[in-house]
Image (tube, rainbow, N blue to C red):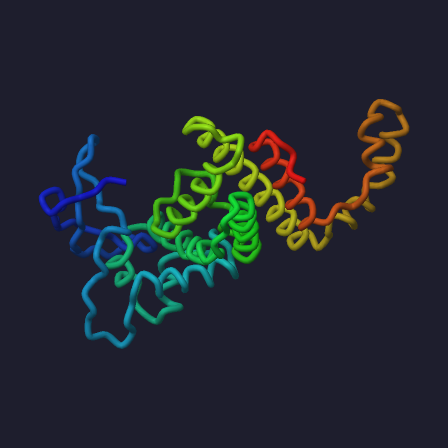
Length: 273
């Protein structure tokens, strides 16, 4: 993250439209910073909150983010808009643009608010216990806020709480026996991130599919049972047949934990007993 001093940060007047209606324009102060690619807006984390004003409804970025999270929990990200958030707060949409420049900043605030809960994970002296606690807390957050899983895996989250979780995870993994340098740490973090993103998105997708179709995995499998039986009887899929006939229905919590510990075993290079 760039560190700005008073000489690099300047206030500039810029027009900003209501992104929902595109019918209103007004001027507001933007804080700009110099980058190798030209001037850019100072990140929301480094901009001061707008000065309180005499208004019936006081606002803050935390309050806006909390309202946005409630709406996203109920309607998903597709049902989220500045106009809906403003209506929920009882203010005009333009007031929100004093606090966030665009939808991307709003999503950044929402994600970091969720990371704040993940960051509350207790301290552990053992690296493995620390990683397990963080990852399981992340899964709990994603199942509570399904839209959170949709926003994982893009560009790194640089909010203060996301960075705190990243620091705790990296610090813990750096203590693993199989991690001997920065390259090992980067690979270990990459493998862990890939597991978390893949596992959480799959689990959330299955939950959504069950809700939208009204059919859970067991009922869906039963409905396609005759077709699958006929296909397996051809003898062309012997390994799949073994899985279908001999495989047990795995508990989601147990499967997630087992796969996570298997990954950590691979990082250490020594099976955990």
